Structures are given as C-alpha cells and as structure tokens.
Image 1 (cartoon, rainbow, N blue to C red):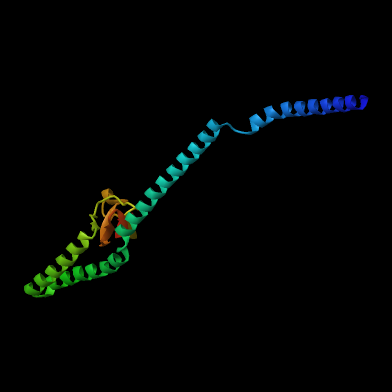
Image 2 (image 1 turned 90 degrees about the vertical axis):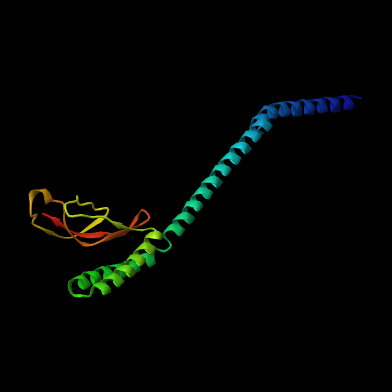
Length: 179
C-alpha cells in the first residue's frame, strides 16, 4: 500500500507540475495567438491596401494608354513638318516669280494638309519678333546685337516655326535673339 501511496503522490506531483506549466503557458499563448477581431482587422487592412493598389494600377495603365493613343502618331507628325516647311518655301518663291494660278493650287494643297494635321492635334507655336525668349518653346540659333534696347533678350527673328502635338513640343521654334 505504501507503494500505491507513493505512486499517487508522484502522480499528484506530476499533475501539479503540468497544471503549473499549462497555467504559465496560457497567458503566453493568449498573447501570441491573435484574437478573431485582430485577424479580421489585419485582413481588412490588407484588403483595403490591395484594393487601393489595384485602383492606382488601373488609373496608371489608363493614363499610359491615353498617352499612347495621343502621341502614337508623333513620328509621323515630325516627318510631315518638313513637308509643311517645303510648302511654305514653295509658296514664297511662287509669290515672287510665279503664276497666280500656281500659287492658288499650292496654297490649296498646303491648307488641306495643314488642316488634316491640325485635326490630329498638331498646333503651330505662335512666335513673333519682340516676344520674350522662352526655353520651353524656343531654340536660339544665334544671337545678334539687338537693333533696339527693347529687343535685348527677346526674339528678333523667327527662322523656323515650332510645333506642338497636343501639349507636347515636338519641334522647338528656331529663333534669333537680341544680345
């Protein structure tokens, strides 16, 4: 019997040790294991962030697509600018030496071509002698002594017309500035 009693005492000691360990572990486990509300809040935050990131992605790709369509024909427009310049030179020469009927024909073709390009978003940059020099739309070819004080640092002459496609400059206006 004493042996049974010793075993019972030993079992009680083991059970008490296990209970103490379990009680000691329970507070740690409750802190380490998040509650359902915490898990829900974490998942909700993750969902909101993913949704916002996806919305930003949609806006960015939509803007890139619009920019692509708006500027897709930029190379074609740049190559057509030389044709417009040639028409302008031809009209000046025909006005000096040529026939009135020839001039009207060339002006008609020039205006049709220019109107079609303008319909596609091409705009000439308006530059007049006396305008302030603006590096965003002008390219200074050379500087000459200013004919008057008002023209110092300003456009004296326009050598080549500049053009914009929508709001982007595709060719700067080539100008002579006063020094």
